[in-house]
Amino acid sequence: MAKALGLDADGIQKMMRKRDYMSDMGGQLALGIMGNLVGQLTYFYTDKVGLAVGGVGIAMLIAKVLDAFTDIIFGHVIDRMKGGKEKYYKWLIYMGIPAAVVTVLLFTVPGSIGNLPALIYVSITNILFTAVIYTIISTPYAAIMVIRTDSQVERNNMGVFRAVGNYGAGMIIAIATIPVTNALGGTQSAWIKYGAVLALVILLLLLLSWNNLRKARFAGETGSENQEEAEEETGSFIDALGMLMRNKYWVIVLLFNLITQITNSLTGSAGTYYCKWIFGDDNLVAVLGAAGMIATVIGFVLSSKIINKIGVRNTIYFGLLGAAAMAGIRCFAPANFKLFMVTSLIGSFVQIPLMCLYGVLLAMAVDYNEWKYGKRLLAISSGAIGFGSKVGGGLGTVLLTGLLTIGGYDATLAAATDSMRASILALGNYVPLIINLLMFAIFTQFDLEKKMPQIHTDLEARRKGN
Image (tube, rainbow, N blue to C red; front, side, top):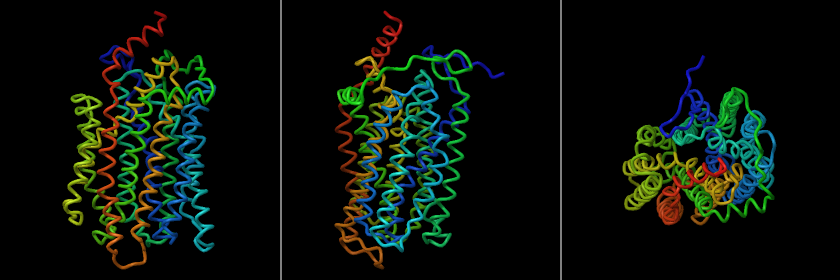
């Protein structure tokens, strides 16, 4: 018989065991692979399929815009849906096989049918992959952190584990994609084989996460079986969205995810162009990714200590200003590979603790919803994560393809022109500098952390009828 978990330091019943953290991280790893894989598609479409960079940018933007709005819409659907806790995790098994199938379809672009039909194919497959399948899985999955446990300690731990899974997915894709596909021949067929392997990994991780959650106990449950609970009456979609838009903290979380994802999207996609045209070898992407593992491990080991020592708000400042500083330094010697690698490693390190706080910030905004309006709006609030991330990813793609188009990007050239180099340098250095400083300015308005003790006291009294 499993040993009782007991209470945390705040007197809250603990719900999470090691296997629960690992399973939860596995689900996030699957979602991270899906999300980061999309970041590699622009390079695949332009340099392996031969599609026009401007057309690819438009096709990807259409998918991202639809994707962003489906997060909030589906979040509202989940909030109004019956089914207790199961409604948040059943999609892991429902969407597992579709996710695997469409992962492969992303790479089976029929280039022989012409540029426009191929771009239509790109739009359709990306919409299915991101706006439908990814949304249906990720939106309720983000909400699980709030319902799984009431312990802030366990939520923080889940945040760290999920960040490890998400960042680990990014590292896997960054390190493996170019070397593996090149080793397989570097052709479109090689990318299809690579996609098939990733599809199987995604399916397995989603199934394992679902299997653990279906047997788990959630916050407030006293027995081994899920208990019936009152479903929250959320009102109409317009009413729910109106409440969220009046919650400045939810809006800041939305902007936080949007703007940081622009940087992540640029880093994931522009890095390959940077290595190929500035340093002359796209295989250096794997070298940077492998070296980045050192910064990643150190960052995650120290994340809890940093967050507990300086607090949530200062951890965000630390990450944003640190990343901006590293981008600024690269501007002075953009073609120096050693400097690029060092600043990239430091930039990655300072942002690791920040990445662990996405779910924590969301939980704060959800608690504020309940305190301010008497409604948690859990799933639609979780749409802030998906909405911001996906619009940010779309804007990142627009910036990428837009600047490449302005620079006259031509994948058939043996060497980059001056305008091509200028656009790639802007993507790797100047844009991240500006974006991180902008996010810092926005986040100065997030003063919710110091208000949370009183909010929790008020909510507890309200729930007890006092």
